[in-house]
Length: 124
Image 1 (cartoon, rainbow, N blue to C red):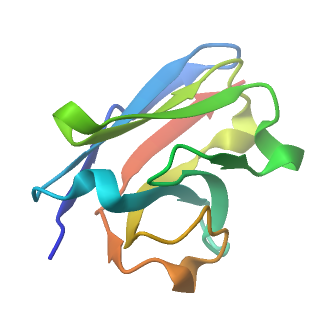
Image 2: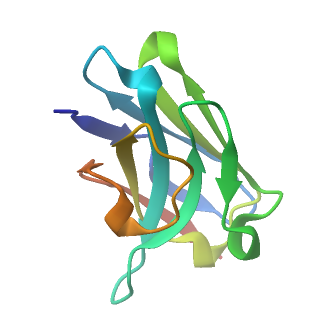
């Protein structure tokens, strides 16, 4: 069982930066692929970025290309999402997800564990 707790969300103006964190419980964090998804009001939860247990990264290029960076610190059992040049359309609840081993999945159903989410609001 893995428990995930996100933090770092907030209200910012367009062009600002935020860094989201997701702290994971357990002693085998390094063997989990970690993902970030987001869900805007009335819309489906969508893939943002993922980093595999082996360090491979994947992004939703259309929406976050060149602006967001995912990273992990296995010593701290934490995955990060650095978000730069934020836009109003980035406004959503951001969720952290985990799956044991695997690869940089982009589908919600591929992940076994989810955090409670953190709200990011970007004003224009």
